[in-house]
Image 1 (cartoon, rainbow over the protein chains, first blue to last red):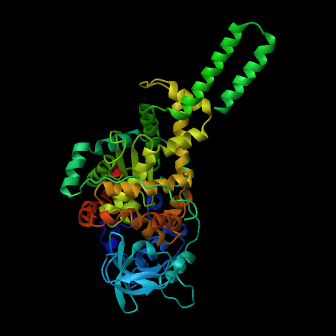
Image 2 (cartoon, each protein chain N blue to C red):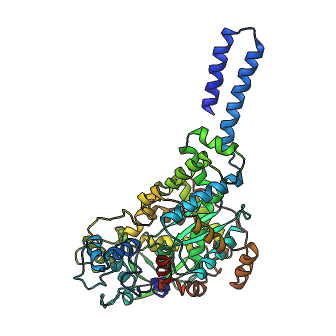
Image 3 (spheres, rainbow over the protein chains, first blue to last red):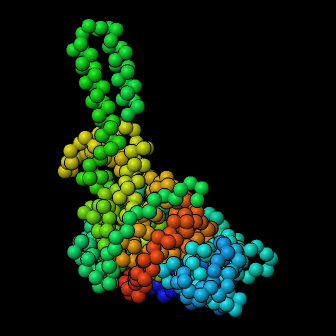
Length: 228
Length: 294
């Protein structure tokens, strides 16, 4: 499953001074006009061949998600999206509870995820493929069996983590950092702009109709009982 | 409430021996105590809807001061349509709901009292379908429905301040120190986060609201799952991680809750193509360029 790579919000930045790297970098490049200044902030890393302007952690992650196409010069091989089962899980032939069970995957099985359909994930694992319940999977490397030489996501994450300096500079930069939220000054003009984007109830109903969304009734769910 | 009872006891205890036979004084003391009690009660229960909206507008203005709106009408309108449709499926359909995409790479979303909801460009960019967007917006809408932030503001502020806000009639212009203080206090909650049970409740309600809107109800868990797979060191997740319970824990709770509950909703659409189409122009950063020249 790599539909995120089609999400056009993930397009590579058209100009090195703007785009994915964020507000902080934008502001800095205004100050110096040399994007190279962003290096100390971003952990000073360019030997791996990632687009220098991507934050290394983000770049590694995007590559892990199969988005290397958007980072020129990045890893050529694109690992599929890897997930791990958090419990023993039935592998079904089709995305239905009453479909034939092909096998049972043990806890911490490594699988490749191909796509989702409602509560089901289509997966591939050691020669077998089929459907498992999506919530029996976690994409986090937490679920991964830790062993040396594992070339999966975990390795990429480690590379990314060591490439990061850990320092962040937020002073004088707009953005959603804790400090900025504490010292934010109101922007009434933006508030008015936001109001102009609001949709009426009538518009919303038309929009739902166009998407063939049908209203259903369903009660809220109670909190889980203790011990469950 | 407790302080009111304490005050009452204090008044009663002092007034009684000094003017043991003067019932008019006692009556006054009682009256005062009752008024205090009433005021405190009001403060914890009733911030009127107009006052909630006014307070929310102040907080929303501050959040927009921290991160600008994405300058892309198509994306903004799209998100507003999805959000408003979902809000119509709830117990507060008539709030002046407004949804805003913040032009920020951070991965986050915020709900503000009175019906303001924000989502970052970074979070939108990690999504794959309209059902995922719906799941996240429905989570935020739930915070507004249950007044989670309003309660957090009340909890943090001194009682008199909230009472002052609750008492005061809406006024056009002019200084309103109580409002201003509560807006500042309210804005800081976004750096601190809510009680984690509020987050779990919003998850539980969010999947239901998305299902009511006709969406594939698994959009919210799908987003949580995607974020769970991201590098936890990524700075774009730092604030989300600081202000929310662990993604693994949230997924575990939905995993406990959802099976069997949404079997009749499995065939509902996720509208991935419409989502991708709507996002089409948002990645070109023209907005950022325009904003700078403004």
